[in-house]
Image 1 (cartoon, rainbow, N blue to C red):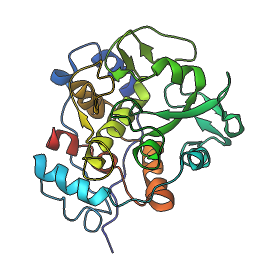
Image 2 (cartoon, rainbow, N blue to C red):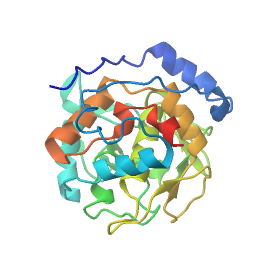
Image 3 (tube, rainbow, N blue to C red):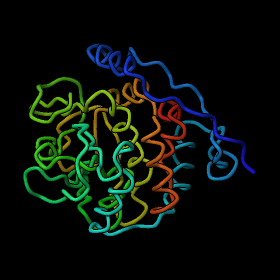
Image 4 (tube, helix red, strand yellow):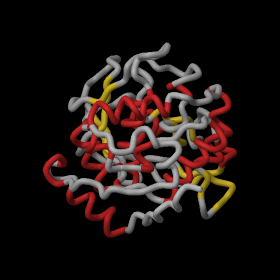
Length: 268
């Protein structure tokens, strides 16, 4: 039997507050490396990746996580009602950027509804909504229709202005900054996509870079900011539960950066 997984901690309010303050400084200089972790999957699922770093680790993780089941875009609706269920209200889902708890039944495309947000923007590499990256639950989350539209296909960076139902998220002309409690989640979702989709199947080779305004290129930024967010906002119980459900119930693969956030620095 694999060794018991080391328990993780919830993200405390103090950490989220600190992340806001730290985010005002240069992220690449303020983030400290994530502490090494041990999971029950290290001796089985991740056995070929343990001990590696750099391109060797990235390649090994790609080989591990590319073996997945795909679901249709219509099936994503019901899956998100399970993966993003409000732990305090089983009839609701938690919206990613706004943090609002909204009824599961209010999924759709109208004002007041929630829809399927592609954290890796669809236009970056033209991933669309076809089975594959366009329906990969590891980067799809519920979000308010209007908030989703405001985020659009913007890259992630620091700064901006608030907006209705922002929950603390900010937007400016060329970037979007999620609320502090999910910045690490966003970083780990983006970096998962860059490891899973390496251009050796029908999809584009997705990669991170340290820029905004990436448009239709298969790139997403900014890497230095995402790395800092990964350090400042470690995985919590909600994020870990999603990873388990996607692995066990839907796709059969895992987001390795939720299990091992220190692998972000080990690769990049």
